[in-house]
Amino acid sequence: MLRTSDLLRIVVKRRLRQLKLGVILSIGLGIAMFIGVDVIGKELEDRIVSDVGLIGNVTILSVTLEENLYLNMPDHLFTKKTVNMFKTLPEIMYVGLAMRFVEVVQTQIKDTFVNIRIRGVDPFFWKVYDLVATEGRLLNEVDEEKRARVCVLGENLARNLFQKGPYIGRSVTLFSDNYTVVGIGGGLMMRSNTLDCLIPMTTAADRIPGNTYPNRLLLRLRRLDDVEPVIERLPQLILSQQNTPYFRIDYAKDEINAVRTVIGRVHVLLLLGIFASLGLGTFGIWQSSFAAVRERTREIGLQLAMGAEQNDIMRQFLGEALFNALLGGTIGTLVGIIAILVLCILLGMPISWASIVLHVPVCLLAASFIGAAGGIWPAIQAGRMDVAAALRYE
Image (cartoon, rainbow, N blue to C red; front, side):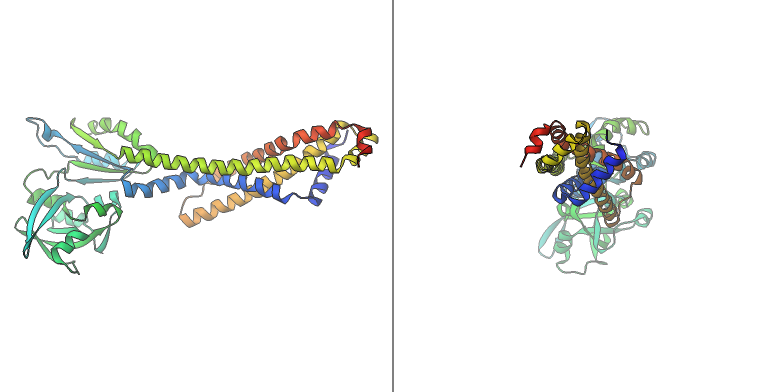
């Protein structure tokens, strides 16, 4: 029987002279896609969901206290203890507070009346909805602490009130008081609230009669998969901090299902691409191995006639198939790791070296399986070849 060292030398020498670049690259591409999708696919998915969530509110929960719907129930508000507890949960990115109701007042500008939707918010409201100031600034902790008479306007409201900018520093009369405009709100989530006038929560409590408690809790979650588990735990979490049994939880259930459908389709497309590439690699090894058997039929006959065992012939051809697959797997693994590092740097994502190291042997084992699957049958055919028929083959 041929020694293993001699077998390896023969396989490497022959394959290096007759590299099947198409097969190698096909396997390499599939392996690179596999390691890339598996290592950073979840992080990318979370970022995509986060971006989509800003458009459709899919990762934002709104918890509203509803004691006002029941007779003889005093008004409740979310306490600092409850808010701080939610800030410690790893699933939650930002926690904000707002008024349960929107107060609508009417003001006259020249000959027209303009409806202003007033909402009291806390300084974290902006982070929950990822809002920015297109002009000026947003409300902050100082405004809330000083109970300042300042406001942030939606773009359409500012235009209706003042026609032309600049808007910062102008005054809006609300409840017989003048409020200074410190900013114009912008961002994807502001498009549906461009007629809003946002004031500090403490100022709303002082100036607006009734229903100005911080009785709406806003939670922005990190991941789409956290939404349902957090919703299930919400009643228990709230009641563990304060006795407010009457509340409603609102979230974008239909939008979540739509986003999951889109992500599922993307996953299917990626998997099809990976399987197609690896399948082509397997078929390429199978075809090239059969072609090699046909081309070297007389050589096989001579080896068998000179005393080579059938197992030696089979091991040689199987080894050549495995060499091609492992070479492709190694190239694909290196390309995949480089692509992961580049993407992590460009997108500012953490590099999971432990995950990368764990995936290297998995990728090489997958490449070995592909080589064995594509090369086993041609190798068996080569080992079972009849000596006389092989020597007469033209």
